[in-house]
Structure formats: structure tokens, C-alpha cells
Image 1 (cartoon, helix red, strand yellow):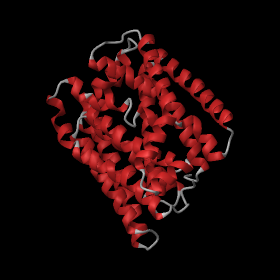
Image 2 (tube, helix red, strand yellow):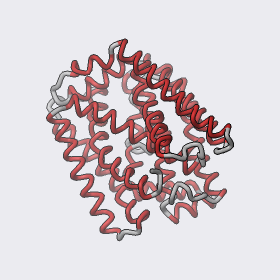
Image 3 (cartoon, helix red, strand yellow):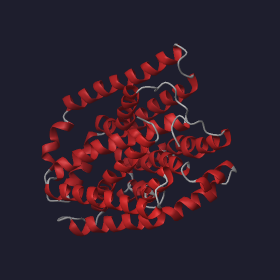
Image 4 (tube, one colour):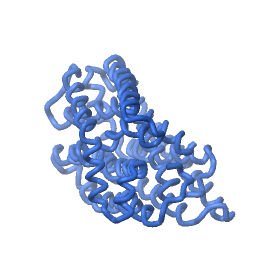
Length: 345
């Protein structure tokens, strides 16, 4: 479905309820847990990432093998073969990068995740919120940087030590020292990130407001965009990164992408239009189950290949995040193809 195609009212309402508004409720409801997280045992702090193994997070990319078939009408066998090849080549290549140069691989992970989570929000704004204040590629690219930067850059400003701990744990899996990343956590660097990223945020919102004021765009989608942007700024400043990003991964990014995938499945669209959310999600879970199991094998492979895995909560989280990184790069390739096919760019 192209981003310019108008959704039927009942389908848009269903996707808005569970794919968008439910994420507002989820992050708001878990805010007290996030604020209390620093005083909780690690196993509880890392609970959102544990949940993401089965609850939306890992499964949200596990239907990639069906995307070419559903979006471009490719045969199922060809669709699966092409996507498996993309995952094999890009995933193996990125896994080798982690083994040989984990510090730069970590930086690459942050950059790729920023771009990917940004592109997910841009699609949701255009297709689900009906945003008219992002008509050009430049404005959409700015929105991508801002939306992706919220979970990747704001925690660096608000929680540098926690951010450093995660970076050290990931590169430490491969017997590397995260000391080279030290300048990123210096006060001057963080102040620069806060000022620069804050300016980009204000610029993006101001450009949208100008289009609304000129009558070129509807007001409500811009208000949704502004409210989400400012709310996420506050969320990632207040809540420690591991908890905040784990919850965001499950209940914000993943749900929006699943909503996008449901639009490609005629049966899911019918179920959602009829108010049968359970049926649509059950079908998605069935489609995602094989590749989700494959993702768990990647986690096991990272554990086996890493020179210094730890059985503690921090070590297990590091293994899981590196596995997510290896899976994210090919997933981004698939989603980028979707963006081009659906007219996002």
C-alpha cells in the first residue's frame, strides 16, 4: 500500500488504536517502572528486552520473507529465497565486522538503528497519521533523523554512564576495550549533541507548523507529530536507556511496523476492519514463528562465537543486542525497499 493511498476509515481507526495509540498508553503506563528501574535488580531492569524475544520485538522483523510476495506479487518461493539471501549476506558480513572491529561495529549499530527507527516513524506518520506536513524528501529525511535520534541520542545526553555501560558490555563480548568511545561521553560532546539535536527537533517541528499555518497541511497530524516528539524527548531523558529502549522497541517501533505489515495481508486487513484484532495478530504470530525461531538461533550463534560471553544479566543482554544488530542490518534493507516501493521517498 502506497503512503498516499487513503485507508478506509474503519481500517485506519483499528490501526490507529492498537498500532499507535496503544504505544502512547504503554509507554505512559510503564513510566513509573522506568523511573524506579535504577533501584531494581538487573533481571527486572532487563525484563523489557526479555519480553521482546516473543512480544513484538524480535518477531516484528520475522515476516520479512513474505514482504516481496505481498508487496510486489513475487512468487512465495522467490520471495523467501531473495530475503534469505539478503539476511545471509548482510547478517554474516555484519557479524564478521563485530568479530574484527567491535567498537566501530557498535557505532554502526547505533547509526543503523537510528536510521531504521526513524524510517519506521516516518512511514507511520505518513500512512497512519495522514501527515501532510512532510511532503518533500528533505522534510521526511529531517523527520527520520529526529525520530530515530530520540531513542539513540537523547539517552546519551541524559544517561551517559548507563549508555557507556551498554557499549562496554557489547564490545567486551569480543575482548575489545570501549575506551575509544570515551570522547562520545564527554560533557562537551553531550552538550553539543543536546544543542544540535535540540535545534534539529525544533527546526522539524517549525517547518511543519509553517505548512499548517499556510493551509498546506492539516493541523491534527502535526499535533500528533509534535506531541510524540516532545513526549519521547522527555521519556528518554527521564528513563534509563536499557528500560526505555526495551519498552520502546516492543511497544512503539515494533507495533508500528507490524501495523504496516498487516496492511499488506488481505486477510489481516479484513480481520482488522471487522474489529478482530486477535485474529489478525494470531495470523501474524503464525507467519512470524519460523523466522523468530531462526532469530533465536542467531542469538545462540553469537553466544557460541563471542570470546567472552557472560552468564550474568548484563552478558546475556549484550549477546542479545549483538544478535539484534546482526538481524537489523538485513531487516533495514528490506524495509528500505518497502519505503521505495511504497513511495515514502
